[in-house]
Amino acid sequence: MTSSVADALVVEGVTKAYSGRIAVDQVSFGVPRGVLTGFVGGNGAGKTTTMRIIMGVLAQDAGRVFLDGEPVTRAVSSRFGYMPEERGLYPKDSAASQVAYLAQLHGVDKAQAEGRAISLLDRLGLKKRAYDPVETLSLGNQQRAQIAAALVHDPDVLILDEPFSGLDPLAVENVTALLAEYTARGAAILFSSHQLDLVERITEDVVIIAEGQIRAAGRRDDILATRAGSRFRLAAPGDLTWVPSAPGVAPTAVEPGVIEFSANDDAAQQVLRLALDRGHVTSFGPAVPTLAEVFKDIVRDSAEEEDAR
Image (cartoon, rainbow, N blue to C red; front, side, top):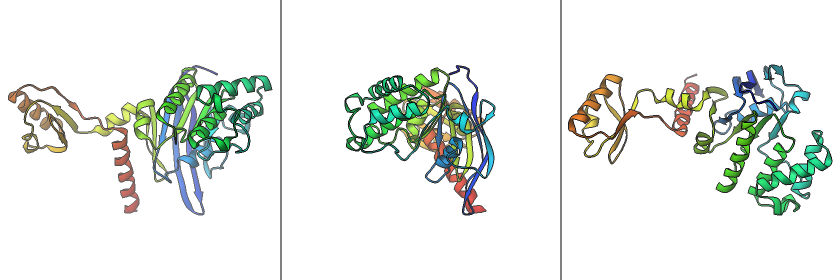
């Protein structure tokens, strides 16, 4: 596995329609090495379709997918680890035997495959249940086994569809730590999740899809800062009820000692001057939105665009 940080995986102009309905429309984005990239969107936005096309499970109508500059063929996709949203392990067999078998299918010899399977299941908190039939495991533990199956052959690229679904907080931390090890070694990782607070916390790059189109992609902090626009946050002790009446100010959030508002730069600086005239200011600066807030704005804008067509 290489360790250079670059756009390893590139999705270029991918389009797919089902019975005339476009599921993904000219989807383009890159997944660099060495970082976690979160792929977020509402139900039916096109995340799973895009991931299946990347893996070659589904054929696109147009567009291309590249890994390190090469079109993704069956041979190239052997370097991938894939976790579908639907669990695919056989319920009657043990997690250990299936994870080891999947490693062997990727060319790992039997002894090494068995060792890797137990090591991964141990890391994920499943060592004591490794040889129990999958159907006897809780849904969260089945999810852990599915993650082990995606990782066991030491892939160069990981495509994970809702890997954190059903996991308790400790399991989330275990999986996050494990994925961090892969990024540290130069893997490219794309994962989808509806848990936007988690995506914001653990990712460096984010791709947001809505109505089958990419609406934002790149560094998480850049996306959040760009969407902040003309929003500001003022924290000061005492009364702040005067701020909404300042010229050019529209409050967006108010709580004791803190107010967020929209304004142009001149109006915002006037608010700061007035606040300083009134006494101590604890902090003042741009009000950077959360990923959840940005996502809601993007989905709302996309829906309005769709309705206007």
